[in-house]
Length: 199
Image (cartoon, one colour):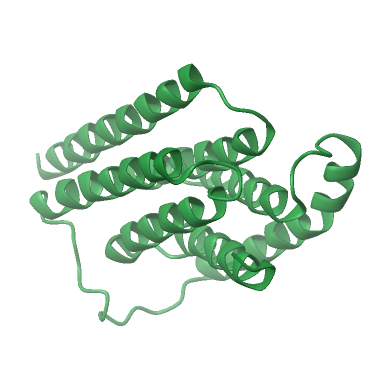
């Protein structure tokens, strides 16, 4: 895979994480989460075999589908074509997303030089961006769906960073189980939130 294509994939990856941070439109958020996992799959092929990278893709798409079906069965899915006014919160989060992306791009070379010399700068940029976006999303929102997406984004960044450093079958299996468990727990809290809101 060419360096230009990998750079485009990293940019799409960070853009999908930014969409989940900025926008509050659930169909779009689930689509962006699925796109995030597709980009991780293509980027991680640099350091993993297609089989192992494929496991991450399948788990990511299963997680996205699980959350989508939970939202659909709860009647919470709205059309992505529905026009919504941009709120002041979205403008604030958009500014933060730009700052976090800039920090990722600027910090990656120094991190590579000082702490992770065996990792490529592109993987470091992508993983650092996902970690920052995930942390900020978990710290600024209390809705179950966005908390779960923030946790999954943070975990994806950690997985990408770890994949560039070394390989452990046990940890890969553990991270797969954690991803699926987070989706199950998130689905439970989404349904519980809907039920408590309807009472």
